[in-house]
Image 1 (cartoon, rainbow, N blue to C red):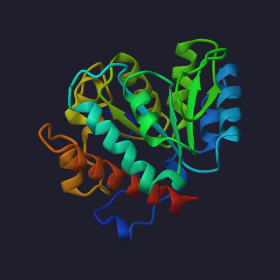
Image 2 (tube, rainbow, N blue to C red):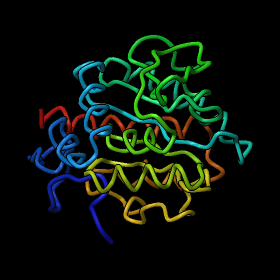
Image 3 (tube, helix red, strand yellow):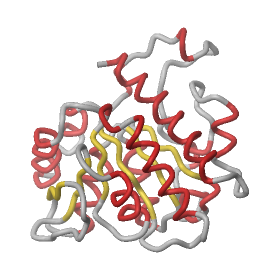
Length: 238
């Protein structure tokens, strides 16, 4: 099955009793070391980490068009919840693409929001700061997959699945909104281990990720709870 998705201490204890090691969480040095044979990637990751706030990095993965009519409302609700509860706890990063990422940015607004684009490109996002990595979209994808500690994946195609695989192999946590379908529903060789409930994730919230008929507000609350729990783990490891 490969690398563990959303790593934490093994065992059966509840999250409140866990003592989690930082070894399996990607740090700045870990990400840079794994790019030692790619000078462009090495330079980009180390530079971006210096440009971003000294906080955990949360990356938003998603399709460039909405394939499920419910997804846009869910993304808007998720971004609103993140803005209210998580904005000050992390740096939020997108790839500056239409669809899921643009909708997220429009609702999230303001500080601690960044777009990673290939060199020379500019996003049309009304909020956030454009940063650059790689000369091509493919190089930017590789850096994006290595940059984050925590990823949220919504819908998506082969590109989203590729970024998720890079992230998981680098030790990051990837949480898929499974009910949205596409890569996040298991297509395009999305990492299968990400569909297994992490030991720290409460059953009710995890189950809501799979429920197509759940209200957008319920899904957003569940996603935010899960993200907050993993940020708690990261905070204890810092």
